[in-house]
Length: 552
Image (cartoon, rainbow, N blue to C red):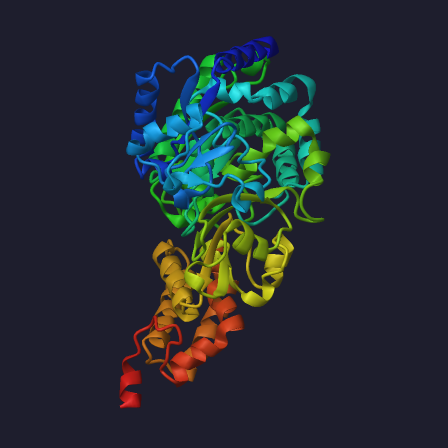
């Protein structure tokens, strides 16, 4: 495979698509498939054939279109026409509309000019909803693997790292560490026994599905990013650590690896160069702690997935004691566009310290739930009310949880705050991997803190005492508060334990587990006091057995 071969494949695929006057795209990512989009696609295909339109109308399965709440989704004409909540019974009406311009039933027509679609800037998700994720030719036709070929034939590893550093890209897994600096550290580390590149696809935050959707919708983008990274740091072997609960993502990744090796863009002598790179998929059992780098490495090595103290950091001594680069799915998805367009291009998007875009999984009490990608620096208000369509049923916004169980709850007073790493940290939350859960005034913030603490307690690996015992103790105290049996001393104890867990736990799971407690106490302390002093839950969520006695 050389550059001419790559261009030939791209041209052939474009020529194959050209004769079709009409293209009908059906989302075949997990969310829409769970609502039987596969049946919709079959029905559309049969309808096209029944009418003898095979030569002018093409039905294609594509990746996630974003607005998961309205799935199954179908689009046509470069997304000028969109259809929602489609069933197989709607196939004839959709073909009528697309081919003959007949009006479609109002119930399935989706306004493609909604701010949800028009208010985004897509880099990571640029191919989602456009290409067939199971066909490497479709990826190559939109410029896929050009960046890898360019890096291997026209750039030194140092020049690749220079562009990544110049871009200002920070790790999208949660910590926000500068990607270029991490790559540079691995590149400089002596690797006499080899080096490794790992894609952290162990997404486990409640309400988060960004990585899963990218893997299902554009798997070759991740492989290309990993291969560029491997070339830059001097690795020849890579692993994608993906949780087994993502079977569709795993299947498409494995298929994509086979396709890429067959074409010579992965494997030995990639793109007819001296660079070789092989990738394997390793399945995780769904332990949240395995998202932590050292626990993930232990799991790949065949050991129990528990963290170890750092240093040494994986960049110096990681998988089997060798220098190892670990980035998450979204980070790798940004690599090819940066190499293709240059670091300065990426650095021109976003804020001074938070460059580029960010993918969020918008969930909870908001009208438009799904995936969005926006430039860093956009306000929370714009995300919740413009893209998200606001709070349904006339309810009032109360808070938004960012960063998953390690994040914090941000109240209404910060709705106009820019969303970037520094701003979120300044109000006691974090970017995390991109989970964003909106809550309205029917939510009890003490109950919310208890929910996340239940998650952290259940997911603690138990290796260190502060996390193992501390999260359980915090959960018990939160349960006492919500059931109306806690005292002021219990609240004081909760705050003391939260501090101990934060500063003495071994890894990030324990260190950040008190964050929901800290943030809800910071902004919603009155709700804690209501539960303790008045035995009352303002939202009516918590059971308050003593309240009846007090009032009797």
